[in-house]
Length: 188
Image 1 (tube, rainbow, N blue to C red):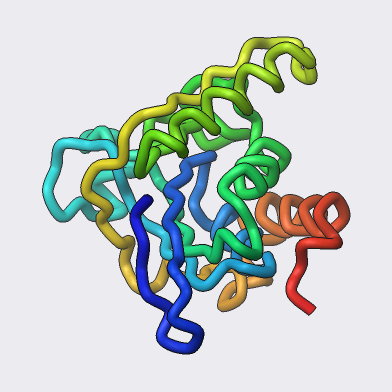
Image 2 (cartoon, rainbow, N blue to C red):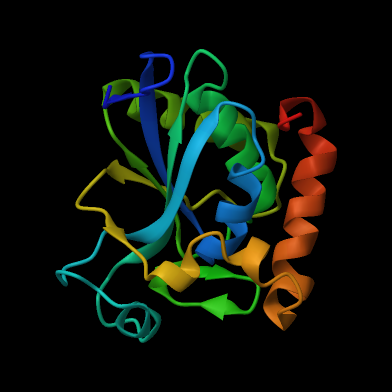
């Protein structure tokens, strides 16, 4: 497991990297969860070094918009993060979330170790067996690659731009849904 040291408690932290459409949505939801120490919006899974938002949105880099979540596994587990992930996006649409279309919006779990890979595969199998969606799950599960943080203005975007049309129409409903479904996991 990839770990980071938390200066305050010196307990090991873990990292999860998830892509489920526009990173602003995932960023806003994961920031509200107890046990999450940091969320950074960025890019992973493409060929270009130091990709820019414009290049990623143009679909020429191969990167997905992702969030990298640093979390305390003693408070919230990787499986819990995946439970949230599968509630706040549609894992059955290939390279698309709502009106956002292109490989940069694909549903993807970038795993940082074998345990994350096994958990991701198990969750996808369980959800597939439950037939919650009419179409099959197309979420990719692939080893983590180089993470490129997005430009500063993308970080914590929803907090800084709650009245922006995309935030009102797309981000806010996902945050509201997560607050309702995962109320017991929210920060106090």
